Length: 282
Image 1 (spheres, one colour):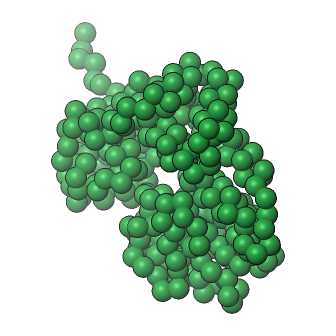
Image 2 (cartoon, one colour):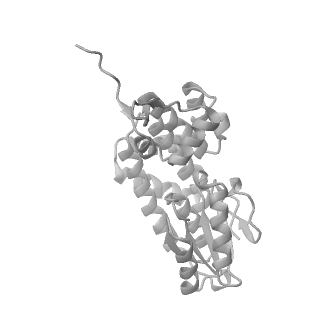
């Protein structure tokens, strides 16, 4: 019998399995020399399964704030060490419920933690580290994408309930929250919305992956005085900066444009656009 060749993956497979964009993968290839694709006789690029596992770890490390130039030089063991969260018994108990796909227990533990800690420590000490823990486990292949999707849905439900329970104070103004075209990370948006609502602002959640013109039209229709855009680490850069410049020009006069999330610090400053630091609101 002939030798069985290992399965090779297309760049579309790599992107769907890691959350990275085609552009990011190709920039890493050119700039850092990884991944190194297999060239088919047709000229098409293909990738090995071990490239996928390493890219998952790299994507997770970058999402947690590490620089691509740092993570690309790290081996699998070093990447795992970077990603290993600090011991947190509350998070580990929640993670066990995630692995078991026990949504009743997950919701109960989340409600208990929020009741004991209050909204801000709950996000900082439970939600964020839980997402890091799940992301690490998914990247190394110890849980499936169905686990990650399930915990995301449960957290979205919890965050929405907390936000809708907040009291609106007219003196705190109004804010609309959204993401730019191509940005599909929703949890950061919901965490930011809760932060604004907890301070008494009327919060209008527009959603993800929206054209700039639609964001501006919605800001006018909803009569908000602030628009907050959530940027993940993967949406930072010059393309994002150009979109923000365009959005700033389209917004009604006097409407403040805010950016937050891990991508905000890595996007070159735009005049007239304010950065939100962590969960501190303006």
